[in-house]
Image 1 (spheres, rainbow, N blue to C red):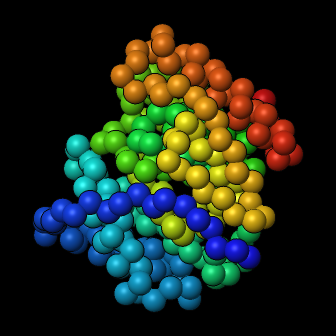
Image 2 (image 1 turned 180 degrees about the vertical axis):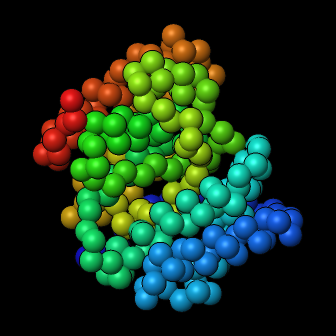
Length: 226
């Protein structure tokens, strides 16, 4: 298969200070993930991925509470991606990836709708080229009106292994992002950016995202949960 071409988000050149408590939490997280992915990855590989995931999230975070926990979640996603790409996992599931600039609004709402409507029919991820510090609170409120809670999500970058593992990639008005690969489905949804908008202004964007997610699910022949 031809290698995929894409513009990777740049890693910020910053020095992240990690407290002793955070180091302990990250070490414990790495031990859990090594056990979870037993036989697939060496302990040092998992530890490095957990640390890099923490540093990447910390560079963009405005609030550092719970960062070790979020780093563990991000590292688990990356390990699943590597396992799929390298054939270390036999548990194949379709992976759908939503991308936008800040991973704080459009891509998070799309992931929320997809998870809610697909009911586990596929794995869904999201990411941004320039992750914001937190999820857009007005987007959280707009989604809560539809009974979908995205308040526990967090902005994160997309990485090379995540791109490679995705079967379906949806860019959401992010002009500089153009991942494509033979054998993969790639779509561009031109949607207005909800950043800085109030809930009333976000509702039409939310509803358009839901419409497109429902169409995507139908195209992928994934049953929509009523």
